[in-house]
Image 1 (cartoon, rainbow, N blue to C red):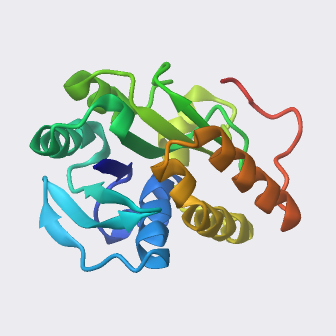
Image 2: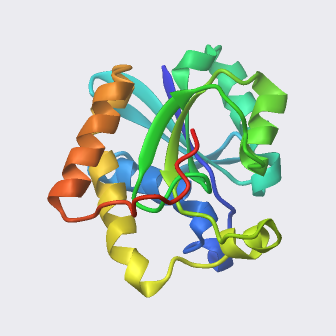
Amino acid sequence: MLLLVGLGNPGERYVGNRHNIGFMALQQIAKRHSLSPWRRRFQGVAVEGEIGGVKTLLLLPGTYMNESGRAVAEAAHFYKLGLNEIVVFHDELDLPPMKLRVKTGGGNAGHNGLRSITAHIGNDYRRVRFGIGHPGDKNLVHAYVLQDFAKDEQPWVEAISEIVADNAALLAKGEDASFQNKVHLAMDAKGFKPAAGEGTAE
């Protein structure tokens, strides 16, 4: 069993926020792989099915971001999953918009969702990091992540979500490097290139 977790805040007012790109990506994966219906489970909503021949549970925590770990831990314990069987999709301030990175473990970079998950299950789970850029001042971060993506950002947000969904089978099979490479090649082919020189800290 593989557990895919999208991070975001529940409720209509947060749907288009930068902080909710993890939700957006997971919903697109469910749509692309015809997984339905979403049901209330594990303190959130979840849907189960197969991706790339791998039995997979998709989970959107219904807790707010800073309590995401409660939902993840409940699902992980129910299925007795190892950390390598958990993939968390989240926004990343330290990557420029349109950039995606996959990594295992590492720091939480002030991300409250990751901090909560790490506190509940440990740190060495897999992460799909969606770059959203940094507002340039740490005092502006809270307002920035809770703002909707701007109108001119919508095309790349939709594109990366669809490309991630198209290539989700690679993630399911543990081919993280190939998945990351395919996403970047497809984004380049669509003309979406991260701005050079913006925050690229790993």
